[in-house]
Amino acid sequence: MKNKIVLITGATSGIGKALAFEFGKQGSQVAITGRREKELQEVKQQLENQGISCLAITGDVSIEADAKQMVEQTVKHFGALDILINNAGISMRALFQDLDIEVFKKVMDINFYGTVYCTKYALPHILQTKGSIVGISSINGRRATPARSAYSASKYAMEGFLESIRMEVMKKGVHVLSVCPGFTASNIRNTALTADGKIQGESPRAEGKMMSAEETAHHIYKAVINRRRDLILTFQGKLAVWLTKWMPGTMDKITYNFMAKEPDSPFK
Image (cartoon, rainbow, N blue to C red):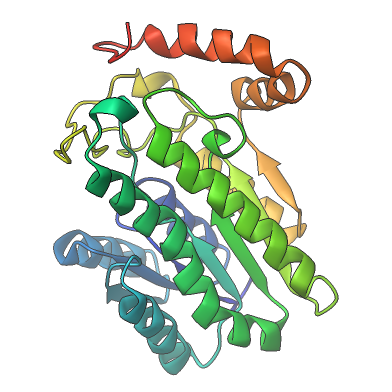
């Protein structure tokens, strides 16, 4: 990855930030994006303190014009684009019957349309470099969970989009990777939206017992190097996907019971 140009969306924290350091330490030149200017500049400074060449671009992937300028600024600054990592995302936690439909739309706009917009404008450049398009999906893209209807739908949509794009470019030298992390220590549950669109604030799960963002980023880096098609992480995540394939009805019950044990579960 030395001197490869990598654009990572949603890089102010969690997996996105860890990916910026992982690729940067391997010699890549990194463009990072995020909606929060202050946090984005802090990550940029941390990367540069490690000797990593970095460009920070403030923007919202759910806005098509922002997604376009993220790609354009990256190419203008570095001269090319080798790898796009669609990482920006948001979660939610509420029963669908209680959920404000605008919250559903917001989750779809960021998680799904953000990936569509960024990929649309990055693809011509990645076709030139025969590079990689990466989507940070979720186990929820293979196994839906209750009280995460919008999140699950957005990740299923991302999976279908990436699968279609993969076949379109498979004979043109472009690599498309779908990543399904299991539970990963990040702030995605802290910033998850409630039924009325407010920030949840506190994670309902034990973050310290999860795979770290740094370990997740290392697995993703290796998957890009090896141009893998899919990456499913954690034993629990792999088991969930396998059982869903072979025992879908049973997995509905297992998943319900598992999620019902969360603190303040909305469907006890």
